[in-house]
Image 1 (cartoon, rainbow, N blue to C red):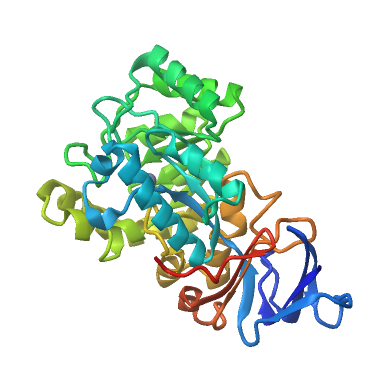
Image 2 (cartoon, rainbow, N blue to C red):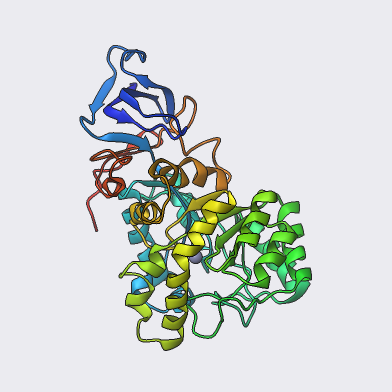
Length: 393
Ligand SMILES: [Zn+2]
């Protein structure tokens, strides 16, 4: 039976002006038509969901998260080192939270035990509620690097072997940890783990296997090495300077930005507030974030947003960059169509267009005038199936 979603306003993810009094017509798991109610014919017998004064949008796309991590519990790397069972229990709960908040697609950029492959496949089979996942499996991390949990890759041979194992086990992309990170005790944010040769090897091996390379990098010379090696996305980039960002634009490399894990009180501060070395890096990152985002806008680099494990807080990520000067419509695109482009799924998701998967959400208000209404999600459809009636855990 066809399904028609009616609403006061539709933001279709194209970037064009909203469609007033709109209809999204769905058949099976796909969108059949989108337009004003005067133009889209609702076939007799169709089920109609009237979202009233809500705004209808494409399902949100979280371009950078992890399934099993909860930053507020502290010691994120330690969480990755745990055995599969407790990690999986957290992941099931987190992904349910993400889905109920309107995230219908998510890229998972690092888990141990290949549990992200099992999660992706269980969600795709309809056995588990959660966003549709793209997964990086085990990150490529140096023994002395940020993100070093259970799997280490030093030198060309280990890098190639681990990429090949990840691909064989079902990885959709390859994640490399290049610079230090905020949430580890001993790595500085501008220090970097890998030589140019090791990054070249990563890119060559991944691209030969048709897998994009996503790189954890904050700033300093390590960022430039990755840009010149031709990686696909730079994750975080909180200490990138304007020159780095302009060079990324020139080479068509995406920036995936996230602010909640460092800026929201339930993030790193809650979990690791007692660790002086982490808090020193967090303070620097916070101080630079606003200025860094101004450079992002100035550079013209393509940017998308992700939550980095702040489950349910895509609305906060989008609202934060609006507070820092992003146009609200542009910020919403960074969490829908552009996020889908950044992760290589824009032919399937990220906008409401005939032929795409029917991932549709509604929010209570007009996000172009008050972007924080993205936290008041009503309807959530994933591939044409209604998933907003899930109880909270
Ligand atoms: Zn991350």
